[in-house]
Image 1 (cartoon, rainbow, N blue to C red):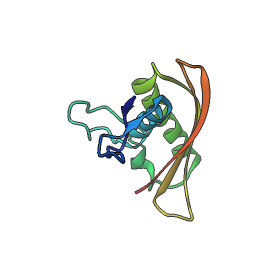
Image 2: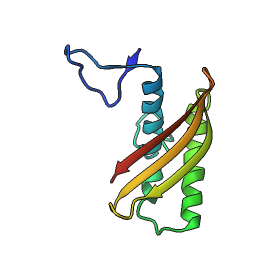
Image 3: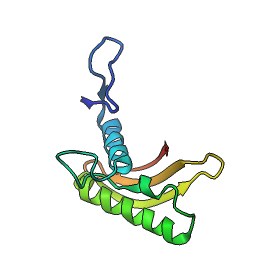
Length: 121
């Protein structure tokens, strides 16, 4: 078992735990939505994708976002997952909302997973 993210207490008042799948999803979320420079002892950790949320919508920005996400996930979680596809989009109905659709394979189990991560800025 692993410590759940974000940190919280469970019903018994103990540190909440996460199983392997949830823990891996938590790690991916941390890489996606952490801006490089936020972590003191890991200044290059993160993808920096939140910087692109207010960039004008264009194919170039979308391609840049996908490359940034793939590179960050490969660097920080490349020993745990293989990224198959990434789609990054902003939600025009909800300004300031970023969504990342990700298809990846867990290396240890060879399980293919599809996940969607959203963050409102």
